[in-house]
Amino acid sequence: MQLDTYDHVDLTGPWAGFGFQGYRFFTPEGREVRPEEMRWWSLTCTIAREWALMMAEERERVWHPRPAEVIYLRDVIRRRRERRLSVVDGAGSADRARVIRATRGPRDPRRG
Image (cartoon, rainbow, N blue to C red; front, side):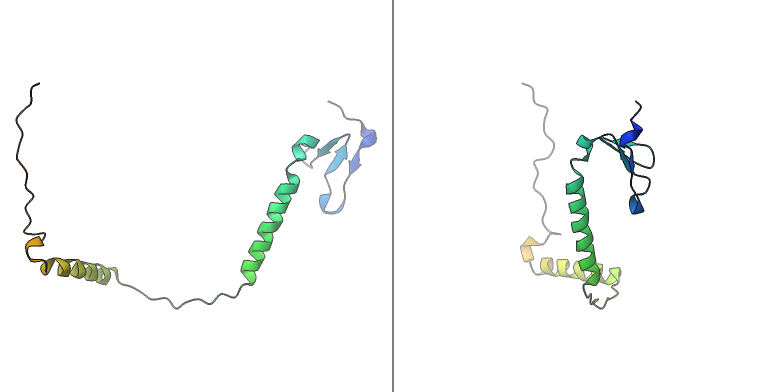
């Protein structure tokens, strides 16, 4: 489709390369954008502006790092094991090592 060059308007400054021709907006790559495709630009720009403000606020916020500690996984696992076993040791008859699961054994095949 050949557009009329009479209505051709080139944008300048940061928008150099973009322009309008007829009722269509075109990009420097030669793509055209119809008016109905521009409906969500305001919402998209508002979301982008809000995101930029939120990121700027986070950058300006004073951050006080907490001192980091090195933990040894071996010690953590040992403490957990000791805590778990200490609960079972004083349990007497409820000791996990002494509890035998009561099962009826293998079943006979059922015919029905």
